[in-house]
Image 1 (cartoon, helix red, strand yellow):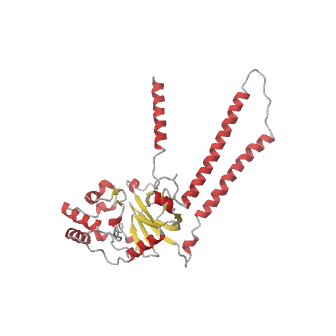
Image 2: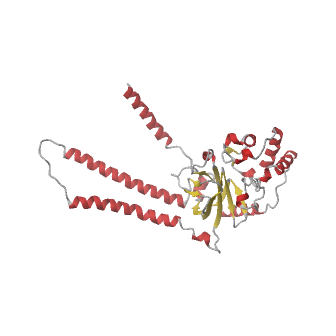
Image 3: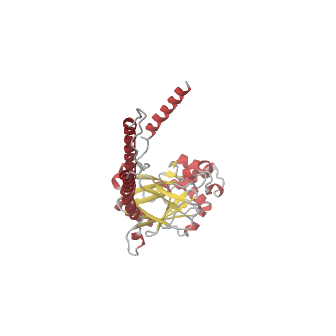
Length: 353
């Protein structure tokens, strides 16, 4: 009975594994590459998997043949083959050839992915974005455009986008699963790499990809998400122009929002900027830029972008992101203050719908 129960348990887990293997979204899965980098890495995964499966099949076939053909039938000692030069050459040459087949495209891809020379040229037109990771949020600076944003990374499709990666506090890791492999953000050096966002794949994903921190960094590591909004080049240029046109904080349009703006200017503005230029030096930017907060797809990277969730976040930030810096700095807000602040924040939009 115990064996039967164990067998059923194994069967259940096997069925669940097959079912869960079909789960996933195009904006999350590494097995649905949405850019040149992801495609190269996916092709290398397929190549290495084919080689491993091929080796397993060959070894299994030989093993079965040996069991059948050389099954002991009498006391006769079979022919000894120690020191066979032919066999030694075969099992030495074949692994070497397999390693060469795997190594050549791997080395070629490594050098191609590491080539960021274009971003270092003085007269380059390449889009460069400085990524700064913090506990537990992301900052994206466009130095060539004079723009700083928080949490939502906006990029054009079908062209290389170059990144400078650094951390403000501890080691994090920048990762957009569907578009390319992860790269660490360190406190003492800048890592560089590039990604390319395929327009057709982006459209399938609703022009929105999810980014993650892929390095254990603290109690809210799993909640340290960011979103990547993709646009064609014309739309991206328009977004840049609209952001650059914001020179002063947007004025609230309703009485309730005006009350929220007054509250914001008394407390929140010490950490949060509401103009995209954010002239403060990088290490003095203590919290995400909120210039276009009303256009974001998530609140705090993980909550739905709704009035209800924003009020929940303002009321109890520690409940939704344990260990976040806002918990110790924002102070207690009354329900009326939260209502007013919510109205103001949701009205912070650069591109009207």
